[in-house]
View (cartoon, rainbow, N blue to C red):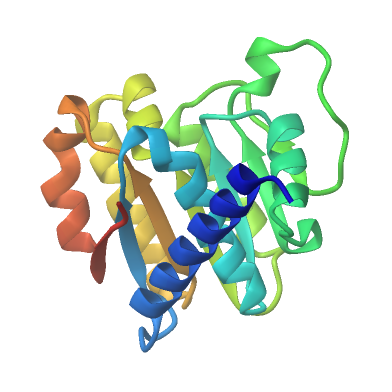
Length: 196
């Protein structure tokens, strides 16, 4: 096996183990803010998703960074069970007239948190068993939404998820715009986890 591939696999495993350790002992309904560097955001998102699906959870991924067609390939490469993941794709419809038709994706016309919230509310009832939400990423959602509107969305979403014992992972990779709402988001979360 290629030494670079071996190193990438070791690094992915290290991130999964770190995330699993940090999540251990949290009661269902938890919310965590995963903070990392921009260049590690994809790796960290894949690691968190793998941890959750390996534990038997089923979840919804809100993707404002990558189209479903790309994500589904990355999930397969990372041994993530696609039957356990439903993707709300916020970008494909506006960027590509040809979209992949699949049972585990819902396409939005844009990255409005209002649209995301309506879709989440509707889809959460269709996911059975232990549930989670992975919001990828705070940074991208803040590009398309005003900070005060985004903060209200996060507050209402996390409150609803907590009441329904649905776990939530919010991914952030810093940046000036994110700092405007970071303190508010962090106070709503049960834990802030820094992943190098």
